[in-house]
Image (cartoon, rainbow, N blue to C red; front, side, top):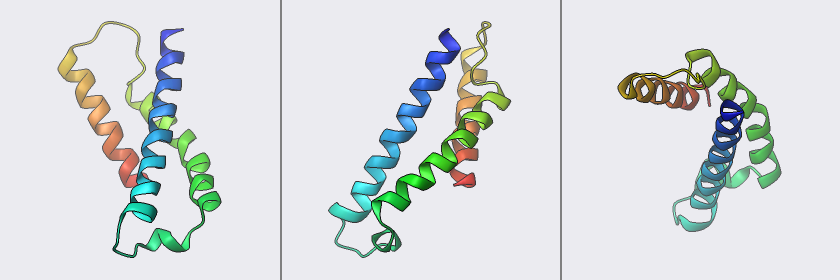
Length: 89
């Protein structure tokens, strides 16, 4: 049950981060960005395509393990997963 909540929490965190990134790049910046030419529907469609891969990546590297772990090891997995997700995007 706890691992399922972690997955949902991560999906919501990615959705919020994607939304904030879209707002910052298209609405608050005076510098033209490439994303100005992409509509909001296409931008969020890419999120729907990428989100399962991000969750699978986190799962494969062990972020959702429920057995006790060292804090530093867990933080390393999260950092590695976030970096991998950014590279994948």
